[in-house]
Length: 357
Image (cartoon, rainbow, N blue to C red; front, side):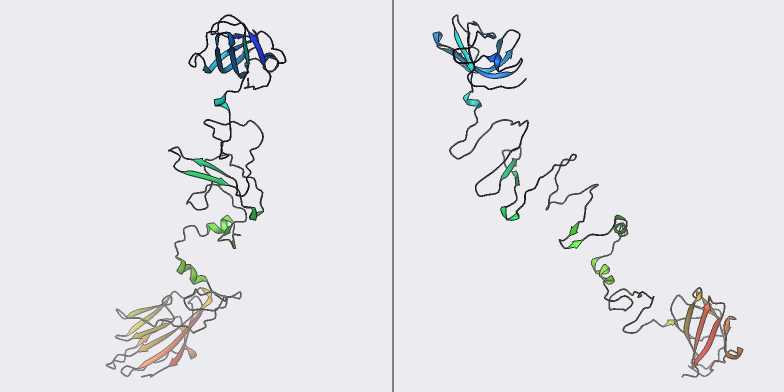
């Protein structure tokens, strides 16, 4: 079933009333409806009854079994738009093209179609004489807003095909904030010149990172292994760190209680203790065996020259096997250095200086 419009189709009919039109044969130099229509095809028709000054224009449906034309929809007639009650006599019925169905170009070159347009095959080519072709899609409320699809300019020297996605309901905008789900980006670029070469696994390493831009910039170093102001400390390929401007370390003061104190090597490498009683020292948290822990310990006598004594850990090995005697005078300073490489099983003790008032 199809809408068929053909030239030079005209027959006579002696039908009366408002029913189907029985087709009586082609007029001279014309062809019959049956030669161009199949059963259930539709066509625009006109009936003219010259004897009774009656006419009718409409959409008819061809019925091959009786070689008739059903008056499916009357578009205009001498009976105020209703089916004409045909009188006796011979009338002419022919294929027509109603004026209100014609698509014409107005004086401004505009074609207006009030209804749907269906194109069953082929292409739509939009060409013009100086501007890029455009198609506008208006909103549902008074044509107040429109989205425009526009061709690339001549300067782009591009001929492309836009293929709509098989699923989904929206195209991606280059300005709107949108969420993309399950999309694969091939050789993507951020800000034009920065190519993304990381794998998904590598990018996922940043999942959950809450660092600020300033904090991430701490990692922006010039040379691995060489320290820089306000930058992270790194080692070079050999595991070596070069401190370009020296090392500044806190001096850790330890105190005693109940004649005992502990030097925790996780706190630093430079310690100081002012004696307020005879004190037994314990060392804790040295590096694992095979690695080195070394620290300096300054012992200060009290201001009253009380001559307090120190009991060193049994793991300390002094030169000659004899622990040094502390300076007993008021405010005297003795400095010692300790070194271990077996996890604290043995500390080698050295006198750096004594009686340093």
